[in-house]
Length: 461
Image (cartoon, rainbow, N blue to C red):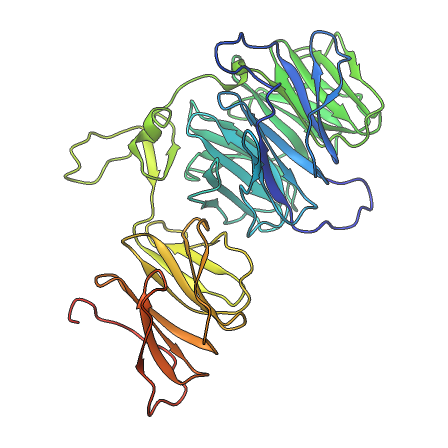
């Protein structure tokens, strides 16, 4: 959410960074818990011991930070920037991309610290999606009947995710972390934000922007209690030990109170404008275990935990028993070229929703093909007059053929002989090259009139 009457921002992006002062590294003792909060152009930390050690995390290029989360074992923080057009993460020395395509307005985000996955809720696309923490193996989880999903919270040890919706009928929903078994927990609620979980006491907390209440319930949305009812504009919310911490846009403050009674209210920090998100960085907020925590659940791609009341049966002949987890690894898919982007549709899941491949600077994609051996996607781009390729996750993008190309059209991969064929309606040729662009040869150049689609039968030759 933005300040009143703010102009709509450009498409947002995800950032990730491991600021070394944040958590423990090596054999050093774990630091005391501290608050992290995002405030548009910076991300700051406050010591919970002194309450006045307001220090900016040393970041550059932050324009409008919004949703915020962390992975304590990897010592990284994650956030969305809803102004920048390029999303990145930074390792020890440099920023890298995390998720940058197919995003509209992702205002909710949460880290699955056991499965090493990143979840986000996008109010613009009305989707809840997941990917690995490095942005790979992206998957749409929930897309039907979503109306402006906002805050998102995960309970990886139990296999559930929770989110709020701000649409025509605001509510709080729950589903398994693979998107299945969705139910509504709280229907009589306003625009709930700052959804957070007390993992020790097994309770949900949220701030209601319409009623200006901070409320709590059990994990089924029952036994609701009002924790605070005299707040002008609560927004962000988090919980740690015996306290809840929240931000108030009218008071321009971060405050604290007892999580059960709302008493013992304390001002943590004042004179803060539009704090978007807040959390407590500490290992106790990311404890537990599930079947995805060890060796990625033996999944090659995504491992998404589900409640222990459900089992996922491995395929027959795999030699493994039923496990309390699910595996979303696409083995059959459709690839589409849509002029300025490439898309993938998994045929192994019932949703058939499309995911944009994270490849930039596509001008006019015409045809597309795939090499199942090395995992590269190949496509022709008529505007840049080239043939390109990249891996499915968008990495290792390369120009394969760039010279003497006029209007490349059809393309086909010979996955057996390791060759690439294409047609060119400008040169009236059919040509072939090795998959890496070497040993190019013209096959047919006579009696062709704008050749277009091409298909191969490598098995029959």
